[in-house]
Image (tube, rainbow, N blue to C red; front, side, top):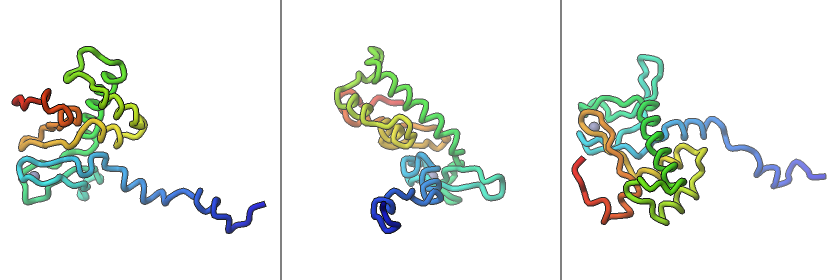
Length: 151
Ligand SMILES: [Zn+2]
């Protein structure tokens, strides 16, 4: 019978739930770039209301705060659609699915929303009017296809 000092038991103890919850809550942490001020938008909360999670530039920038749940859902849906195209070898995929991209999606834990977003997007530019312009990983890795078309 193992004693209380058994190292295996100690290792199996879960990490602090409080720490992991707060770390994971902002799924787009570090991925949003504001085009108005050229700085990353940082996680924040509206303290004078109900604690709504937002991404914000702060008062020095005219950019409106983005409600986190809305921008996260919007981008996550886009990522899932690309994932589905890759998984089904969809012939309409634009750009076409490369073996490299197929490998990356296969290695992604589909239940980890942050991992799905990172597989889909290198970063996301936020225009001065609050529109999201994602930089897709598959565009970055296929420069011949991503021939800089205006959006
Ligand atoms: Zn800004």
